[in-house]
Image (tube, rainbow, N blue to C red; front, side, top):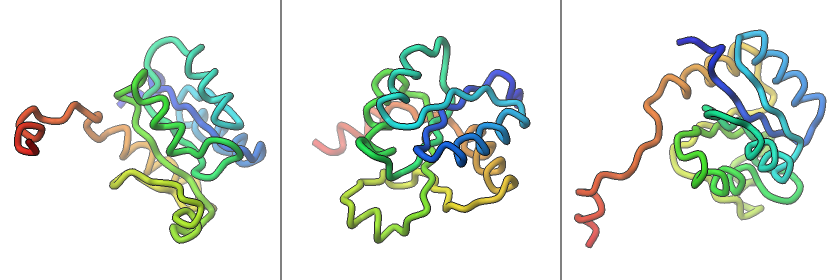
Length: 141
């Protein structure tokens, strides 16, 4: 897959972590739009023309959480795939009452370059999120 045309919105409140991840992604051919929090990420998303293929976001940040950011951007970017990053345990995340969508990929911090790139490639290669089947909706009635 041609990564030079794939854009990643990277959101992490730790500048050093964000910088390291951005450098790795750019070295692997991705276009990276970065932000330090959810508000800046929403502004960056609004200024970014064309598709954003991946949202790579920290789970727990000041203000809006990564999952809440993903839910907020989904109506405008329904094909954007999320990957959550966290140094916290799932117990800590649940304690903070942050709701993770089932099946969304999570990267446990700290992670190595190979793990990051493999996860990004795997998620980008997966079929895009689509609309639910009309049959699924009818079956729930």
